Structure formats: structure tokens, C-alpha cells
Image (cartoon, rainbow, N blue to C red; front, side):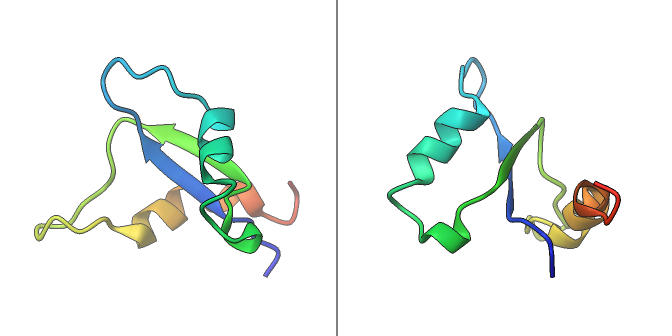
Length: 70
């Protein structure tokens, strides 16, 4: 669909991890087509009342990353 895989990551407090470190860490653990093209860092993930991550909210929040004009 023209969209890349994006990882949304919450850093542990005091962690000094960057996008390249995450990509390098996943390189040998995931099939190439499943590896993220980008890594975004957030303070926390949106969750519903049951504690599940609301992926639809994340998709809507970052929908413009892969729009046709990018």
C-alpha cells in the first residue's frame, strides 16, 4: 500500500537509545520485510481501559508520514 513499517517505541527512563540502535537490534530478529523503516519515540502509548495499545490511534496520529506528498 505504499506504507512503510514504523515502530513506535517508549524509552525506559534514562535510556540512551536511538533509532539506529533499535534498527540494528531488530536486524537479525525479524524478517527483512517486517523490519521498521522508521522508529518514533514517544512518552507513552495510547491505551484503552483494558490496557491494550490503541493501534488505530497511533495510525491516525502518524498517517501523514506516508502520505503521497512525502
